[in-house]
Each structure stands twice: as C-alpha cells, then as structure tokens.
Length: 150
Image (cartoon, rainbow, N blue to C red):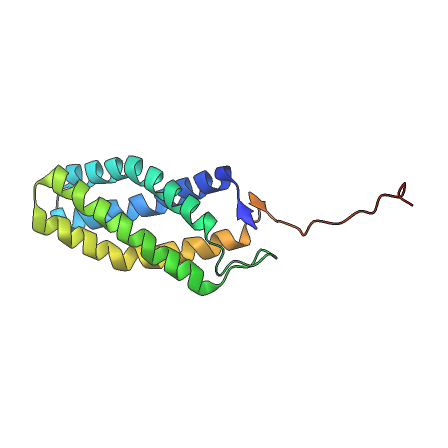
C-alpha cells in the first residue's frame, strides 16, 4: 500500500490548519503580541506545507509498520509524529526568532510545540488511517496461463 501525491498534499493542508492554529495560540501566549503571532503562523503556513509534503513522501518510502491490507501500526504514527515534530520545531524556532528577534521566546515556542504538536499530529494521523481516499493498494501479480500454449 502507498499513498498518492494528492493524498499527501491534502493531508499536508489539513494538518497545517490544525498546526497553524496551535502555533498562533502558542505564539500569542509566549510573545503577547497578536501581530507577531499572526506573522509566525502565516510564515509557517508556507514553509511547513512544503516540509510536511517532503516528510510524507519520505515516509511513503518506508514500509515498516504499514500492512498491505491498509492498516497502520499505532507506533508508526507516533514515530512519524516525533520525526515531523523535530523538523517542525526547528522551523518554528527559526521563524519566530526571525519575526520577533527574541531567541529565548523562539526556543520557548519550539519546545512548547513539541508537546502540543505530537499529540495533535498523532490524532491527525489516526484520523487519516480511517480515510481510504488516495490510497493505492498493491496486489500480488496474478500469473495467467496462455491457453494457446500446448
């Protein structure tokens, strides 16, 4: 089983909606500035859709924890969440430092997101396990005997 590129893009957009709302709220809480929170959330909307798509395509290559019948192990969703979170937190830290010029606040945001985003990402992954659209189920090739032989 593998996912189509359109499924990966759609998952990226749906995840970004959840992720950007979370980033906006955390940024507002940490920096106490709506303009900064909005700028960080808007910038990451662009960077993270691309990064998420690349992350999805990478995980599409890895077959471990993914079964031919379409089921996916829970631990796979968790590991995907952790690897994505590392990429995402680095991106959030750099973007928030760029927007606010506050390095300590940028690290606070990056570390805060580790907790909130792993939970949200895991839930998002489990939701997408139930959605079969965009999945390609690979079947074993069937050998057909040529009736014209012998």
